[in-house]
Length: 378
Image (tube, rainbow, N blue to C red; front, side):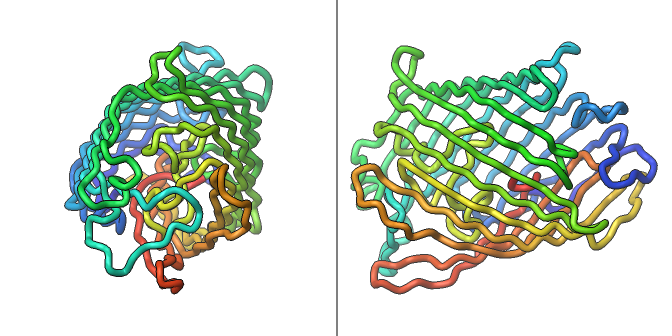
């Protein structure tokens, strides 16, 4: 979500994979996201590099104030300590608020088709969410890690009259959503922020139940595998495969989000770029992603090593609902992105995705979505 920034960092020109001593990013936010609208605000991030190269960084703190003319409001504060108190524990903690008067809901299932004659707000609902996230990761042997996550949120989802959300949940929903997750990782990435070699394998289980203070009951499993390979000095091939399944009973506003560390939504900026945010919701999801990350320029700007990449990509994914027939009918999207890496510690990206949106009359139409934000999608 970053366009325009004031950056200060200290380092000499590092080679690929090397890190700067530290990186600051202080930026007025000016962005356009097809799903969220025109946005503005302020963003700040500080990353303290690890001179030994054993950690992705020593610690990181980030804060944001952000709002858009699409009714989206997301301030947050989060911190990441890869070696908390000098131990093998990594602690990530964050507090977020999400206010979205045009939150998207298109129905449940893989082939939810849009009506060309629908009113502008037909696929909107009003979401209000306060979220506290806590995650602990323990590196217990070489590349192996165990993790536990506790997400506690106060949720309010309100329906507008004569909308798809009102048809599915007329009275809306509100309450406390508590989700506990546990997972196993094998991480052999050359670098966490901009990897060029290695893999990341993940398996996780999750659950929400009144026994832990939640107003919803659901269980789920997630498995993912990502890999990176250096193809020549300036080109990296990156890919990801994932599978997710959950029991019936999930909160409607959570049905698009997968498990694991990332909680990736199906549709939008992370997976199926080109479709609307949270476009698909279901009980089972599979996905494949591929990118070619090609460095085309590198320079020193105000003592900051800056590297530019162009990244063509392809995403494929599908969801299923337990009580519907099993049909293979994946969604395919593609596009190209621009990535900027600062001192090997901060990565900004702007992706343009193209998808074929499905309509009730049986036709499909090409649509384009734009995303400006931080970090690689995987």
